Amino acid sequence: MKKTTIVIGSICFILACVVYFPTQQKSEEIYYLEYGSTFDAKKELDIPKEASDLSVDVDTFVPGTYVVQWKEKDKTISKSVVVSDTKNPKIELVQNTKEIKKIHINEEFVLEGNIQSIFDDCDGDIHSVEVVDEKTFVTTRSAAAKKYLEENKKVYTSDEDVQNYKAKKKIYESALLYTDLDTTTVGTYVIKVMAIDKSFLTSVVEYSIEVVAENSPIQENELAAGAKGSQMGELAIQLVSLRDGLASIVPDDTYYEVDESYGNEFIEAPITTTNNAVANAALDKQGQQLTSEQLVTNALVDAGKITGNTSSMEAIEAIYFPGLSTAISENQLKPGDIIYYDDAGFGSAHVAIYIGSNQAVHGGFEGNSVKISHVKLAYASSPRYYRFTSKMTWDEINAYIRNNQ
Picture (tube, rainbow, N blue to C red):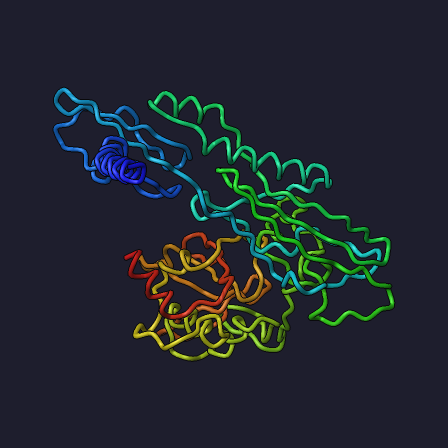
C-alpha cells in the first residue's frame, strides 16, 4: 500500500510540474543580450503594435537586468532583458610576451614602447596609459572586478533608473602599467599592462625585459620595444609624441639617402633609397605610367603589406585608404606612410607614399608618370597622414570596400 501511495504521489507531482513551469516561463521570459548590440524591443520581445508604451528602454551599453513592462488590453505583461558584457578589452603588443627582450644598463627606455594598441570592440580605443605602483595596479584590478559584478546585478524598471546610474557612473579613462624595472641594475624585470573597459572588464598582459651590461651585445631581434633605435608600437609613438613632442628616443625609421647630383622640376635633390620596404617599392616605380591609386596599391603589394589572391580591382580607390589605415600626425611621418589629399586640384582624391625629408612619391603626374614631389602640393588640399599598420588580404580589403560603398 505504501508503494502505491508513493507512485501516485510522484505522478501527481510530475503533472503539477508539467502544468506549472510552462505557465511560469510564458509570464516571465528572460532575453539575454550582448553588450553594445542592436536591440528592437518590440520585435525581439514579440510586443504587439497596439501595446502601450514600454516601462523602460533597454540601453545595451549599460549592463544589468531591464524589467520591460507594457499593457495589452487590461493585462500587464512583463519580460526581463539581461544585458551583459562578455568580451574583454584587447591589448596588442609589438613583441611576443614569451620572448625576453633586452636593453643596456642605464639606457633611456620608453615603458609603453611595446604597446601597439589597446581597444574594446564596443567601447573603442584607449588612448592613454598611466604608470602606477604595484599596489595601485592590484587594488584597481580588484575594484574593477567588484564593479563589474555590481553593475551586472543592477535592475532597471524605468528610464529614470538608467539615466540616474549613467550620471553617477565613473569609468577608467586610462590603461594601467606597472613594472619593477630598474634600468640602473642588471637583471630581469616584469612589465604588466592592464586595460579596463567601460563595463569594468579587464585584460592583463605581462612580459619581461632584461637589463644587460653595457658591453654585452644585443642583436636587432633581441632589442626591446622602447629602447633607442627599436620599433615601437603605434600607441607608444602617440604617447611619446604627446608627452615629449617626439623625443629623440623615437625609433630611427627615417633613414634615407639623397642624390644631390640629380634633380628634376619637382625636387632639387630627390631621395634615392630608404630602409622601408613600402617607400622603396614606390621609388622603384619612378617613370612608370601609374595613377596615384595604382602606385600606392602596387607599393603595398610589393612590400608584402597586401597579400592573398590578386584582386579583380586594378587599384584601391583613394577614398578607401583612410579607412584601411591608421591616422597619424604630421610629426609622426616616416618613410612608407600614406599621404592622402581630399582634392588633388582636379576635384578628386589623391594618395602618395612618403619617403622622408618632406618628399613623397606621387603617381598621376604628366600623363600618370610616377615622380617624386613635395608632400604639400600648391594646388591640392591639405594632406592627411596614415599608416598601413598591419598586413591585410585582398579578401579583407574587398569586404571593407563592399561594406563602405
